[in-house]
Image 1 (spheres, rainbow, N blue to C red):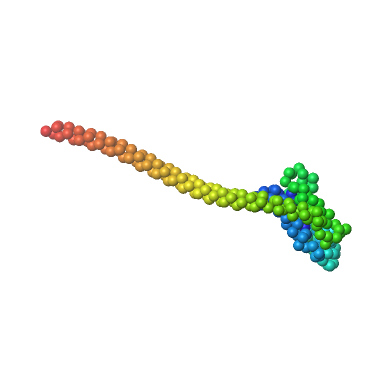
Image 2 (cartoon, rainbow, N blue to C red):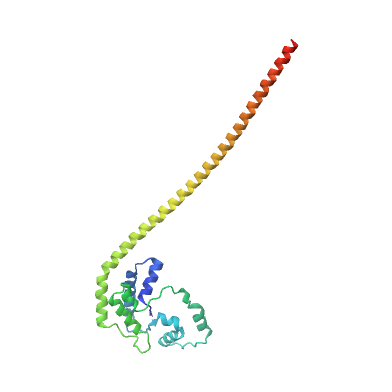
Length: 232
């Protein structure tokens, strides 16, 4: 059972799924409490997420001992591959310490107590089959019961938010299409205006040519009239 700081989990859920951070903290607590309760009395080992990144060989050794497997050697090629390539620290985008719980204002005391209990289990000195203490278990049950209406309300708000977000997405797509159509229409208007301007220019040139031809015709007619007058 991997134990990670609930704030880091909540921040990751917020970044990936836009979950409310407080809801993410409660979900972490609910899933971790269920994981502990449903595995009581069964072979299990608690693994610190941070220690897995900082000393993966030691954590693999703990898992191997629990499962009755050979403890891996640090110079094993598959272990080096796991350490150097599979575990990628650059993919860790959220980092929060235990002291961040109170400063964040979103981690209730019962979640902090659960995290502390889980973190204590991430050592070989602890009995891995140890159940949750009665006091902590009762506190968890009471807290989850009180939080249930809030979580349901949060789910309703998120569902409405998703609906509104989908409406915004649809409206944005329609607006983008309308803008595209408008740009196409404006381009067509520009093309027509250019065509009209070209036609007007041709008409002006033809009109000038027509006036020039009329003037030439009038001059020719006048010249012809003078010649006819001389002949008569």
